[in-house]
Every structure is written in structure tokens, then in C-alpha cells.
Length: 335
Image 1: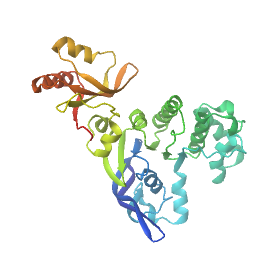
Image 2 (image 1 turned 180 degrees about the vertical axis):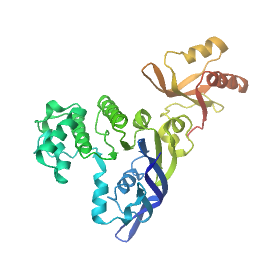
Image 3 (image 1 turned 135 degrees about the horizontal axis):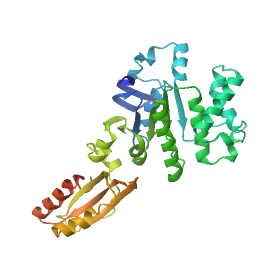
Image 4 (image 1 turned 30 degrees about the vertical axis):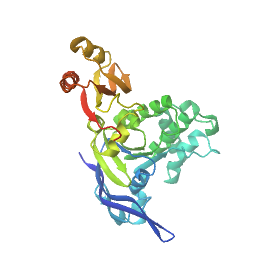
């Protein structure tokens, strides 16, 4: 599979009033054609700076960023404009023009590149149909909900037939239900149009829902990168564990308490694992935290459990869950 982006040893340092701040530190990664790639990190980690290097809205301090093998730093202004036509972007704030109708907003990217009026009007109608808003074509943004505004922004981004769609916190301003609908739409667009999508977010739930691979950024560093399933099931870095592990408001019942994390990733949601454990082994566990859901009858999510105090009983519990197809890992208290 061809690489759309390749970053090698990228640094980005800002200078202000004689002080320096390094937002990106030796970041190297590739993004493959046709995948949905997530970039996740806490606020201020450097993820938005990173995504803006992908279309050279941010000039890097050192290293290289390539788009289909072309070093962006070496492109002349005209060449860079052509590349940017292949890279569309949507934002948390929608960035719609309130004085223009929905269809006029969608036409904007086509108008910039000189597409004839009749042609851009027809293309805009096609894009609005894709995002399910053709009936809102002549309305103004002020009359739309947040989810509808983001759909218009997606239609506008698609109008120029880009090769890549960059989404910078595109669902952060939306409620969970609308977020799910927008993510489903992006997944559909990715599958039907073979569009490479890069999603910047601070929410692991967004990454889990639609991304193929994920890069975790922590204080400007690439802390971890890999398939979403693997990172979710078995995070290696401290930053990844902080994002993946559920918040645990409870402490073990004693100093010798042992905690484990079990991951539901593709198991049947109607399998009562905890009840089966008690029935088949006679052993009990204390559920300290849980974040599970059913998607199409398949269970996804995780639990933090406190195990029995006996080493033999702990091993029995762990083996029982592993035999049931669950990923099990130890949790260090206050990690």
C-alpha cells in the first residue's frame, strides 16, 4: 500500500520574546493510502501542530514531511497550492460563512479553483446528497444544528475531490449521539470513496470507533503507534495507558490488592463472563470500573477488576478470562 504521508525526524520549535518552545520532537511516522489514521493526545500535546505540518500550514524546524513522495518543503508556491487542493480540512468550529446559503458554502472550494458556476452548483448538490442535507441547500448556517453544520463542512471539503481529509477535533463540539453519526458518515465516505482520513482528537472513543491505526502524541513526542485494536488491548506507553484505561475512582480493598484490566474486543455481548466465573470457579472479583458497550451484538470495552488475595486464585481468574478470549493485563496502582 502506498504511503500518502511520510514524516521523518520532524521537529517544530516556536520562538517568542527570546523564549523557545518545542511542540514536536523527532516525530517519524507514515500514513497509508485509504486508511483512517488517528492522532490522539491530551490538550497541548502537539497533535494539532502535527496535523498542520501535513499541508504545510506549519513550517517545520527540521526533518521532512512528504506527500506521495514529494517533500513539501521543496515545493514552489504553485506546486504547494496544487498539493493543498488534494488535502481538505474540517475543524471543530465548522468555519462556515453565515451570509451564504448551505449550497453556496459547499461551492466555495470549487469557486476558489475557478470551476464554472453551473458545474460547481451540480457538484455541490451531489456532495450535499452524500451527507444527507440536499433538502437544506437553500438555508443559512444559522438555522442548522451543530451536526448539520459539520455535515456541510464535510460536503464542502469533499467538493474538490481531495485525496486526503484532515479532521482537527471535528466532533469535539458535538454531543455523543451526533458525534457517532458524523463518525459513521466519515467511515462510509472512507469506504465508498477510498479517501484517506486523518483524525485529530483527544477522545479515545473516537479512535476506537473508526480508526485503523493510531499515533499517540505526548508532550511533542510520538509515544506509541500501532493498530487501534492492539493499542487498545495492550497499551505500552504511559501516555497510551492514560488515554485507554478508564478512570478508576476506587482503590483496592487492601495493600495486597491486585488489579487487572480485561478488554472486550469482539466478544459476544450477551456472554455473562463475571457470572460464569462465579458459577464455574466459585471465585469472586470486585468490579472497580467498567466501560463496555454493545455494537451490533458484539461487546467492546473494558473493566478494572480487583482479584482475590490468593496467588493461586488470582491465576485461576486470569486463566478463566483468557480462555474466554479476553485480553487481560495487570494494572499498576496510581500508574
